[in-house]
Image (tube, rainbow, N blue to C red; front, side):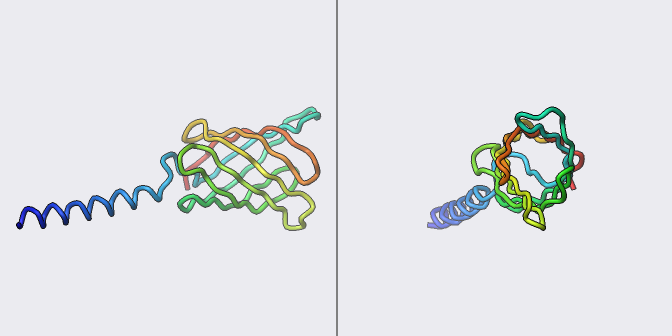
Length: 131
């Protein structure tokens, strides 16, 4: 009887452990400082910027700054893969963007973006530090 009770207790503990693990993404945490480059379709030139991202479970938040201004970031990272979405909103709301990205490693991402001004392009980023 004692063995049966011990087994039941162990099963409950194991189930709690695995349930807690399931609430954390199965890949890299994006928290940190990043530098990025982006190219707008139909235009020559490469633009540069920096961003700071904080990740809490699957939610992403932060700020980025580039030639088009400073943006507040919000988004999410996928539960099962290295895909993420970021929305950038400038405080004057004159330019906003949506980034559909993929972590290609723990410290690099790439993706495509579109803006509310009907522009789009590609973006690549590299982590500078994990804050």
